[in-house]
Amino acid sequence: MAKFRCVLSDVHNVAIMWNPLIVSELEHEFGLPIGTIMTSAFGSEIGFAATVGRVHHEDWAAELAKNLPSELVRRWLSYLGDLNHEYITLLRSLKSSGIRVGFVTNATSRLEKEMLHHGFADAADFIVASYQIGKAKPDAEFYKFAITKAACSTDQILYIDDDPRFVSAGARAGITSIQYVGNAKIYEQLAEHGFDI
Image (cartoon, rainbow, N blue to C red):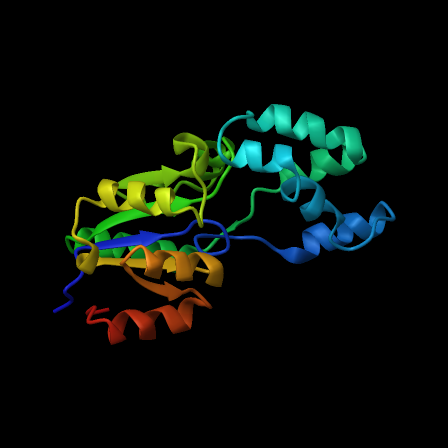
């Protein structure tokens, strides 16, 4: 039987998948170098401010449209990702078995819209989002908050994230941390940690 009583899961590129072709095709259509959208959106001071809740999502989008074609920004932000149905089913199964499940993610205030659109809020017992707490991964304070919210000791928490930087930060916070690389692998990883999947 697993020693873990809580699973913390990232959202973006784990529970919600982002098709990189959506971004690259938009950049090609508007004659922009590959990487322009993501660099403009998140590689800036206002991008970070939106991630930690100092700027509302709509204000961040308006600022972004000052530097990029407004139609490109509108179309990019209209894409809400694709739900990873199999993974969400797995989380629901863990939750129903008595495991406490929490989503822990860096996100702007659009997260609520994304979760409502995809309809998976019920897969978790709680959510820790950067825009709500004013701290973002890999900040140690983010993990402290998540651990407190989990209401479990650190040795009873398993953390799943696709970003190796954040996986390392989770490990530094004292929780068992694994990198999400796909649905097939996550079953193996959970089994290795004692989960009866």
